[in-house]
Amino acid sequence: MELRAENITKTYEGKQILKDVSLTLEEGECISLLGASGIGKTTLFHILSGLELPDSGSVFLDGKDITGKQGKIAYMLQKDLLMQHKTILDNVAMPLILNGEKKKLARQKAESFFKRFGLDGTQAQYPSMLSGGMRQRAALLRTHLCGLPITLLDEPFSALDAVTRNDMQEWFLEMMKDIRLSVIFITHDIDEAMLLSDRIYMMEGKPASVTEREKDIRNERSEVSCLCKN
Image 1: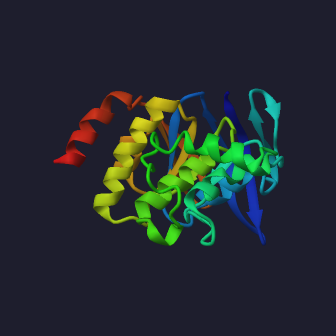
Image 2 (image 1 turned 120 degrees about the vertical axis):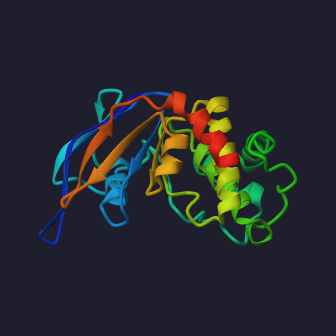
């Protein structure tokens, strides 16, 4: 499915944050939204996910206007937001249960992904028992099980230490290949954007607008990956 944002403009309390922001995401593609902290990346995510309405402009999913409509796009925040009183399996299965699956079947479906997401053995554990990287894997699996065609990731690796972050980035690349995720990824780290993205949109200015890095960077991924490992 294609996601397309056209001429998104947003103002808060008389201050324009976004101006004529447009971008596209093709099926199976990962694009990064790169820009300084506070420039409006999260605001744009809120609009793409339907949590907020733009002042002007529209969001389309496969040509259908979904502006202001929630539940069309999956959105994972910076914090994992795992429920501390529930096991990892029950945390991950929650989207399936909320969509009407019976708990037993939801657990079975969720558990079938645990090995693929590197979570096997954590089913009966609680969030406090897991490392930051493992918690983020659980949060990503929970987001994936929402069953929505597009996923928005708001700096999911920013709170991890450098070694764990590098491991998660490499793992995420493999997951992209394995299950063909369609992702928009917020980051302010150019190396992370280069490693993970097919294309990069730069957010700059006040109010913020975006420009696409025209060069296709798929072929540069392996070079950056090697540099990260050395």
